[in-house]
Each structure stands twice: as C-alpha cells, then as structure tokens.
Length: 319
Image (cartoon, rainbow, N blue to C red; front, side, top):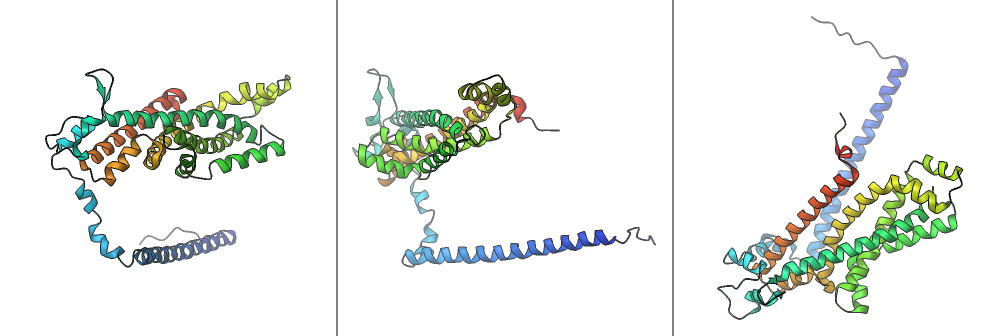
C-alpha cells in the first residue's frame, strides 16, 4: 500500500487555505443569491407581461411563430421578383405585386431595383454620419483626454457634452428632428451623427489616455506647441485604433439607419415597415435578405480593411 507523501500545511499555509475556503464559500453564497434573485426577476417580468396583456400573454405563446409562417409566399421565386423588380405572374393590380413600379430608370431600359437604391441610401446615411462623427469626435477627444488637456475647465465640460450627445438613442433623436425638419434622410443623418460624435469621442479619448507619452515629452522638450504634440506625437500612435473604431461604428450606423428609416428617415427601413404593415410577404423577405447580405458584406469589408490598415501581425495569436 502506497503511503501519502503529502506533508501537513504550515501555519501560514493553513491560514491561506482557510482564507481560500472562506472566499469560496462567499462566492457560492453570492452565486446562489444571484440565481434566486434572477429567478424572481424573470418570474415577475413574465407575470407583469401577462397582466399588461390582459392575461393573454401565455394564451398567445402557442401562436408565437404564426407571423413567420404568414411570411412564406406562395412561390419562392416571388422573393427574387420583388428584389429585382421583375413582373409577377400573380399581379392582380394591387400593391402586393407591383414590383416594377419601384424601378429607378437610368435609361429607357436600364434601371436600379427599388430596394437596392434604398439600401444604397441607407449606407450613404450611415457613411456620412460616421465621417461627421469621426471628425468631431477626433477634435473633442484630445480636449477631453486627461493626459493632453490638463485644464479642468476645458476637459470637464467637453466630457459632459459628449455624454449628452450619446445619452439618447438615434431613433429618439431622429423622432425629434423629423418633427422639425419633416421626413427624409437629413434628419436621419443629423440624429446618427450626433450620437456617433458622443460615442466615438469617448472611445477616442480613452485610447488617447492609454497612449505612450514619451513622444509627447520629447516634442515638448524641443519646444513643440500643443497642436504639434497632438499631430506628431499622439496621432500616429492612436490612429490604428481610431480606424478600427471608425469601421466598427460604420457597421453599427448601418443598422441604426435602417431602424430610423422605419420611423420616416428614408432608406430601406421605410419600405420594410410598409411591407410588414401591409402584409406583403415576398417584399418583406426580399428586404430582409438584402439587409442580411449587406450587413455581412459590410462586416467582411470592414474586417478586411482593418487588417490592411492595422497590420496582419495584430491579429496573430501569441504562441
């Protein structure tokens, strides 16, 4: 029989063991309490949902997927006809099958399908808003960074301004500007730009505060002014991260512009809302297919561009 070779713990080792056991017991206790609180929170939420729906929440659960089933068209080719504005053999004169009416003719025979044109409009809203957000966010970030702006009376108000700009979702801002400027893409651009300035400004000044300040110290030693220190000392360091955040924000703004379109901000979101509300199955699925394809394409393009700008070595695993 093999004897155990474990030696008894010393006094300090036993103290460490007891402390670890105490921490493990507290963790188990907190985990249990968290699960109990989560259970009651979910139960209360479901009860509240049922009460606010006049007791019909649970009764309607079996019909949860009925809407998805209603979206299936009688003919799968109808999706492609709606996507490319091709005539439908089921055309009965109603809006449900009037696909060719949405064509944007460039010549007498060459046209752009309606949904492609609307998708380009949505991408333009997102791209212009992102560019505006990057420009102002870049300027505001250096005024809000602690290591670049020692003046509290400049840094503190700038941070509060950016907090206010990103405090409200884009769709809320869009509703406000749509009420003032009427329907169209301009209110959507303003709303997305405002939120983007606040969001990117915060991300940018956090990157600046993590920059290596040795280059700034060298420039300061040779008499460089504040703008020269920003442009030659800090900007080359933070630019790769700035570009990454720009591309990430562009992806987010594409989706935000789609949502804003549903409330009157133009683009693909507007026609999606109409097709859903009118029960046009093929049109709805065509728009959803185009949206998914566009989001995937934007994501892949952003990832590829990020790799080229930041460098392939930044994405290599450390071995």
